[in-house]
Image (cartoon, rainbow, N blue to C red; front, side, top):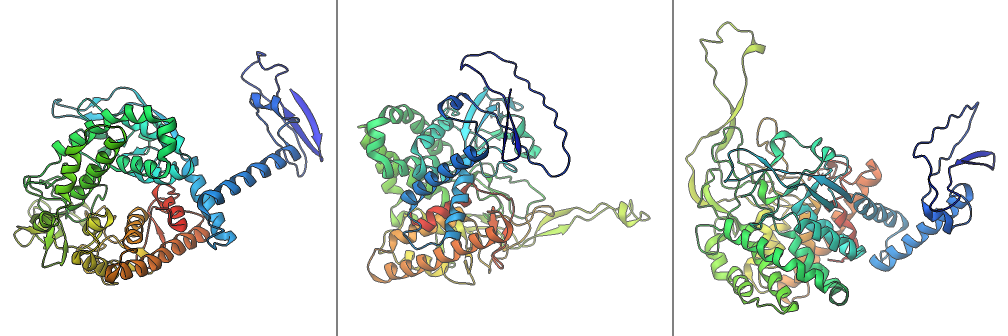
Length: 548
C-alpha cells in the first residue's frame, strides 16, 4: 500500500512493485475523519507502469481532460455538428446520447427458455454469451433483436469493429432452423427485469431483420475497410444470414402469393381489444381485430423486400449466386402486386389485410347476480373483457399509422409514384401523424388512438412518438428529396421541418428532465415510458448530423 498527501488530501493506493507480483485480492482500509474531507480511492491495472504518478489528484484531472479532448475531436470529425452550426449545448447533448449508447453495451451469459412445436413445455437453449447494446441498462438490461439493428446504425458510424463483434454474437445464437430468439434473457440481471409472460421465446415467432440492414449500412460506410480487414468475417456470416433469411421466407409466408404474416398473435384472447403483434416490434399497433391465417402484414412484406435486396447486394460482393434474392426483391417491389395486396382505396393508403371489426370495446364482464346478490361491492369481481359489437369482415385494416408508412420508410415506392405523394401528404396532416414534436405512431382520427389495449395496458404504439420510426421517415424523406417534381419538393420541406421538430424536442426534454426517453407524448412532447432510454432514441445523433 502507498499513501500520499496532495493539496491537503490523503491519497491511498495499493501498488505492485513488479508487474508479475502476487498479492492478496482483498484490501480493507478504515478512515477516521473530522470535519469536511475528500477521499480518492484508486484502483489501477498494469497500465500504471506506463504513466508517471498515481492516477489521482492533478494527474487524474489532466488525464481525464486529455481523453475528453480526444473524444470531442473525434466526435466532431465523425459527425461535424459544430461545422453544421450546432451550439455547445446541443453538442454536449449529442455527446451524452452517443456515450450512453456505447456505455450500455454489455456482455451477458446464460440460457434462454424456448417453446418449440417439438416440445410439450419450454426447454433451455444452450448456454450462450452475447455482446450487445441494450435499450436501457437499468430497465431493459438485455438484447432485443430488432432494436439491435437500430443501435448498430449509430455504432457503425463510431466504431465498426464493435459492430462486427456484436453482429457475430447475435448470429451465433441462431438455431439449426435459422431462428434467432427475439429477446435475449441471459443471466440473473436480465431475468430480474422481465415479466413472466415474456420470458419464454417461441421458435415460430420472428422479428424484423434489422441486423441485415445494419450489415448493409456497414458496407455503405466502410466497404473497402471491410473487404481489406474482415472479408473472412463476411464469408463466415453468409451461411447464417442465408439460413435466417430462408427461415423468415418460409415460416412467415402468407396465404396469398408474395404476402407475409407475423406469427404469434393470440386469436382466442378475451382481454385484448386488438391482439398484440409482438413479433413486429410494434406490439399493440392495431392489426386485424380477429387474427387468422389469411392476414397480410404490410410492414413484414416491406422488411422482406429490403432483406432480399441487401442479400442480393452482399452476394455480389462475396461472388455468390444471388439471383433468387434479386428475383424475390423484384416481385416484392412490383407496384401492381403491392397495390393488389395492400392498397386501400377507402383509406387512400397502404394497409394490412385481415378479418377486422372497428367496433371492438372493453366492457366489464357480467357477474353472477345471484351469487353476488348480497356481496359488498369490493368483493364483486370486476374484469374488463373485449366485446365485438359488429361482426368482423375480411378487408383492409383502415387505421393509419406507422405500419402504413413502410413502403415509403424502406424505399419500396418509386419516386414517381402518386401513392408516395399521397403517403407524404397523410404524414404531414396534423389530424393524422404530424405533431410539433415528431410523427405520432397512430392517427389522431383512429378509433384506437391512445386507447388501452387491456384494462392494465396503456397505449404503447397508439399515439406516442418513437425515434426509430422517425429516423426511418427522415432517412426516406432525405432520399426522395433529391427527386424533381412535387414529391421531391414536399419531401425536402417535410424533412427539414421533421428534423427540427424531433431534435429540438428530444434535446429540450433532455435538459428539462436529465433523460433521453423511450417515447414522447404526441400532444405535449414530454418524455414517456422508460428512462434513461439510450438505445434507438440515440439515433437523434445521426438525425442531427443527417448521417442516414
